[in-house]
Image 1 (tube, rainbow, N blue to C red):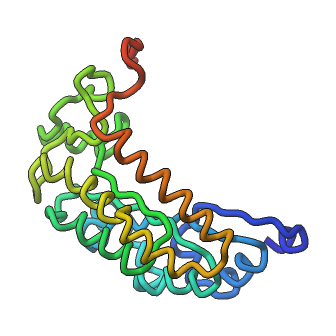
Image 2 (image 1 turned 180 degrees about the horizontal axis):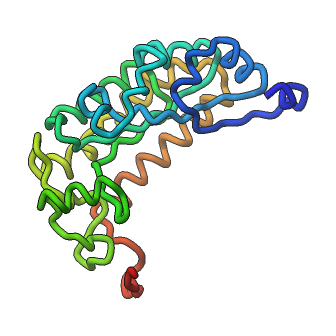
Length: 222
């Protein structure tokens, strides 16, 4: 970061949330040209953080304080959230969207928990008999955002529709306008508005879309 300071470039990156514990490092990020940081907040539910093995996500303190530390330095925040762990209820997506809007996140994404093949999550859900399709990524019937396992704290419909409702709320025109009012620099505002416009378009374009292109062979896994 010290080497970046004299170059005068603007940059963005994904960062581990524990970086926010180091005020000097945050100052250096600002001086070196960082304008946007992507952080995987994942969830507001402590039990879900424990289940996903990310209890350390709280080492930097309250999520709102983390966002405030970055925004004080002119660094916008792109937050990502996931719902569907055993402690999550239908309101978990609403809570995440409310947090993202209230704390003026520039960009946010809300996702259903999706067990990928080869992961411990996939193995656990398979062992518990909760997978709806153990080869969902090859199924011609799978559609983007579809629930592919039976969650404990919500219905499969909740798991599919909750992220979409959160995205629609966060990317409503009113929400975009309120969050944009908190961005003080014109070029940062331009980046934020462009990203939000793209996200609004993607919500409509990707919802219920199939993987790949129609007629495209899917192949087989080993």
